Figure 1 (tube, rainbow, N blue to C red):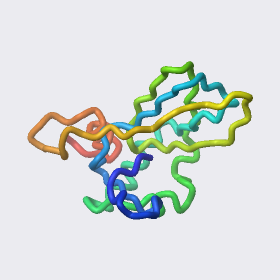
Figure 2 (figure 1 turned 60 degrees about the vertical axis):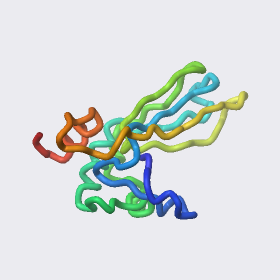
Figure 3 (figure 1 turned 90 degrees about the vertical axis):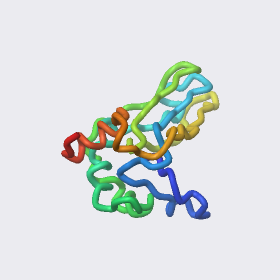
Figure 4 (figure 1 turned 180 degrees about the horizontal axis):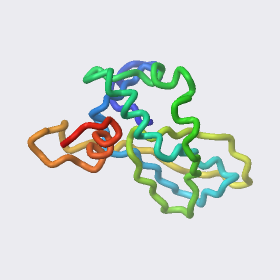
Length: 146
């Protein structure tokens, strides 16, 4: 998941995320080289964003730290299908910021180059505006109505 605030803390495990996805519009994975299954592709747990949204709901505006959310190894998402972020150079994955994802060892012959830059939202959540697709997914996962 893409923790998005409290990033001034020197320990990244203390960085935070809240159910509003404050400070983050999307999780983006850019492949700058060809990435095959042996080239340390990012592992993505498909659908895990819905479970993480439900887990974040009780934390409210303050959100939770990466340490709190990962304490059990994301056990609640263990049954999610794993997809590998593979593809030719130039591939971009646009994902929900709550998607559980992780690195893995490189077993290939060529180095791989990728980046995960932040996509900042235009502004904070405004209930007077139509919800973004990320907000729609959060509300659906939490069983909230519009």
